[in-house]
Image 1 (cartoon, rainbow, N blue to C red):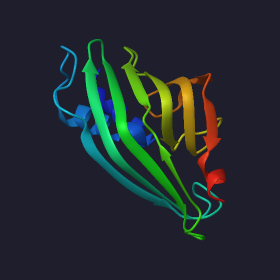
Image 2: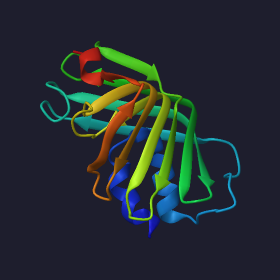
Image 3: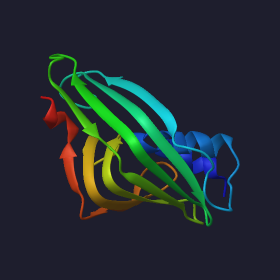
Image 4: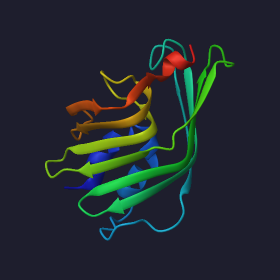
Length: 170
């Protein structure tokens, strides 16, 4: 199974692991385990027009540090020890919400091409389909399995609290 075949669609559905997918698509898998070095700087900016993600236009800014850890068995962990997201309602820019998203994302690439995702702690999710919000903040443990096209094989489950990010800045 080719790792980047699955990771490209998954990269579009959650921001916290962007560095992970870029690293896997372009770099070797170090089956031996941990990645070397300190967490790396991450910067991400995206905007949606009204009706695309929220009823109003919204800007997403993610800044901080992440560390990608390659593990044996087609597994990847992304730790975010210094990451935060700022959401801005572009119709009313004073309506902002900043959240520390220092959770972790664990990705296991399965032999059939699917991927199991497990989010722990605080995470920001972008681009998922129902039952998750398109822009969401989660805290706790959330797991799901996606096919190579980003469709649910096993829908989201777990003990996480899930917040619709749009409701925080409306």
